[in-house]
Amino acid sequence: PRKFRTASESGGKDGGAAKLATDGNPLTGWSAAGGIGKPKHAIFVLEQPLESDTAVLELVFEKYYASSLGRFRISVSSEKGDLPAKLLPADVEDALAVNKTTRTRQQVDRLHDYWSEIAPEFQKERDEVAALQKQRTVSPSTLVLQERPAQNSRPTFRHHRGEFLQPKERVEPGVLAVLPPLPPGEPANRLSFARWLVSPTNPLTARVTVNRHWHAFFGRGLVRTLDDFGYQGEVPTHPQLLDWLASEFVASTVRGTTQPWSVKALHRLIVTSSTYRQSARVSADLLERDPENKLLARGPRVRLEAEQIRDSALQASGLLSKKMYGPSVFPPQPPNVTTEGTYGGLNWRISPGEDRYRRGLYTFAKRTAPYAMAGTFDGPSGEACVARREVSNTPLQALTLLNDAVLLEIAQALGVRVVSLEGDTKARMTQLFRWCLVRPPTDKELQRLVKFYETQRERLASEPKRSNVVAGTGEGAVTDRAAWAMTARAILNLDEFITKE
Picture 1 (tube, rainbow, N blue to C red):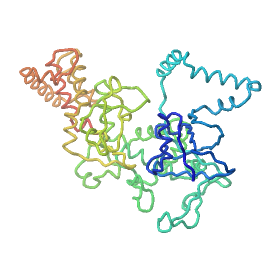
Picture 2 (cartoon, rainbow, N blue to C red; picture 1 turned 45 degrees about the horizontal axis):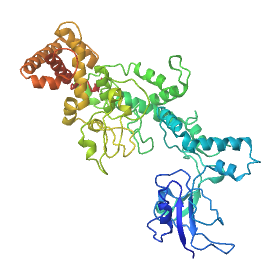
Picture 3 (cartoon, rainbow, N blue to C red; picture 1 turned 120 degrees about the vertical axis):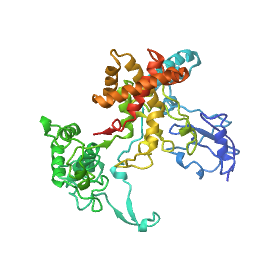
Picture 4 (spheres, helix red, strand yellow; picture 1 turned 180 degrees about the vertical axis):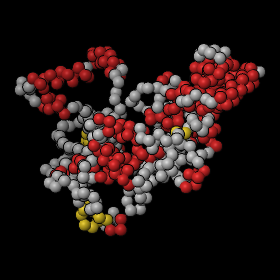
């Protein structure tokens, strides 16, 4: 055994981390923390130089299993003294190791470029370049799966009773025997599997896809168990319709469309059908015979999903942002939802400007602190993949539509829009009703809403402070804006607003 006198590392402070690798304490060591995925150098200096021609170097990994050592090399030197570790790019090292009289033009240019990157006299120019680069838009990135090389495939075994320490016979990739086999002569990899999934000889993929889109429109799939088309799932209520829709989906010959697997063509086929365009009204006799509408004797009546409710309200108010792509956003929500989250709080910084009203698709999601409004309307928590969301009806949903920060701002924006309209109260009320429910009100509905508006206006006129809170900002008299905002809140809380029928 030999002892090290000192150690230093590139990028570390005084080589402290490298020294921890030689202190004899297995709980400390040289870690890649803070520099994962980046090259690092360390120099370890022995107390006494080695005189033997051979040696064994033992590396101990005890702590950071997730940031272990990757590709590495070990070099030895007869240089004396405590040499500091300096990290140079590999091509710069190669160029310096060559006699300057024999360096290629590319190596000379590389050395000049590197010198300009570290020379103190160019620090001002480098700072200006760095400031400009920070202004560039950086596209977000994410982790992806990549096929392992054919010569380095990972073997898979059947484990006895599921015990990973008891591997038995080796298993090879394949598909279920009850389904069509993989194409002959093709390698059993992910690409072949992807082609097999959408092959015309495999009817399962098209059936599952069509069934999920049918569920989205009707609230119930032709096969109710969206995530189970096996023997334990329910049988289709209309098997011939399911097969026909699947074949049309693969061919996409609807209305002249020639693009195979066209979801847009499938949607057009469903929503223009006489089945979908039926009235959702139901008689007592039909409700008794077919309460779940399995026989499709009436049009669908489905409660909208959480994201659709929020987006519909934003669209009605004119606040919905049409901006696409980019990082997640943080719309307003009660602060205690994230500050009291499991495994530590989350600093929910509300997004400014247009990002405040982007589609629900872009809302930041955290499993331990999901967006509150989404959870209230049965949005999934993200802890597991779900093919079908459950639909509930709770008082908390009505309270959310009345008091949620986003819905309150939407009502205020609607109040501003209505005040800016010309016409009498009935004309304004009709337009507000159309914005929210996409139809004109009946005479009875209009009469009741006008009465509600006038009652709220009289009450708010006697309470200036309440009017200022309810009205928000915008043009028009504060009392008028507040009364219209209260009326908009009432319309947004109607069952018809959150229900498609």
